[in-house]
Length: 187
Length: 187
DNA sequence: GTCTATACACCGATAGAC
DNA sequence: GTCTATCGGTGTATAGAC
Image (cartoon, rainbow over all chains, first blue to last red; front, top):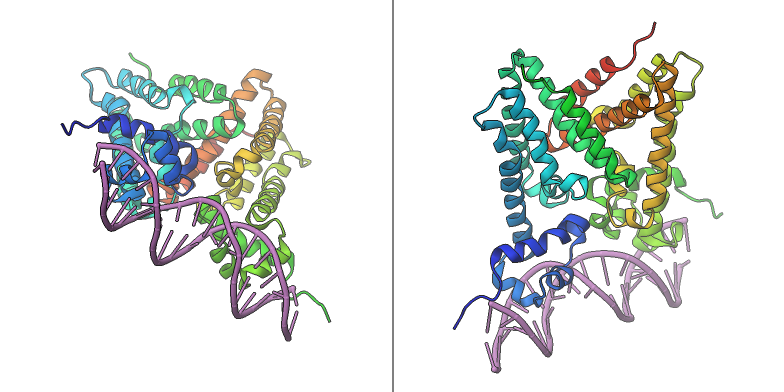
């Protein structure tokens, strides 16, 4: 029988931390293969496009996952303030309390980001627009809502980056708490 | 005569954009050599340690430059609020209005960041402490000052990252304006 | 100080047996 | 679907002439 031993999901889950920690250029096929327990040639069975395909698939998955885990909460049937707070919690969840990075941002910078740069930029612009829309729902004018959305996104990624650079997840944890306090409160 | 044609400074200035745009792993000796107009072998005359030494030197220089251009302004003979505002302007200067990245942050993430990770973390912790001290001078309690310093650093790097990801320097420009407005104002 | 030429390891990728 | 073996190319680094 030709049953596949490993599910594609498991494979992708094993590849993720390699790209996450070494970046696109830093990840080698040898490391990727070792992480999955497969030989290099076997990886090409699952990803005929090689390293670039793996990164591309992972990038799509990461976008979908971040969208699902965080941004989807902006559309829930709740008040806008509560949706914003839950969005922040979702982001916290996605990066595991600041212990993980954001693969979208990481791959968005390597040379893979040059190929998919416009798509990534478009995705972030879309996310920004959706955030801004919810801010507007809380009663803010469009311009102010857009700036608040900018500030929130910058805060999220800025705290995450600083936590990594300072090697202190507390920076992220405390930062998120502060961000949530700065959000429009439920009435 | 054995005069050196190129000054070390000029050399470093030419190497910088390569590491800036491709990261540590992405920068190759061929690109590095081409950027300087030298042969690969000649680069080894100036940097016997090869690529790793180049990155290490550049990292030190970038730290010194950022310190000089931005953080040094925290020690000027002015009121604390004015020093904070001038610090933000200095950061803006350092990253050229959001058009350049921060080499310290970029190299701090590649595999070079693993070797120098503790030094980089220490440097950022020091910068944070110096920022927090100035916030205290404006009358804030230590804890609040530390959190405000966190927020400022996160904002700076977060806006910079988002500007890159969204491919829109306006995000950075407008973000800085907002950050400055959020600072303690001169009395 | 800079060059050409080259060493040699490892990269991403493929062939083909099982 | 996985493997071993190997390809061609490129990466970092060095030797040695000028």
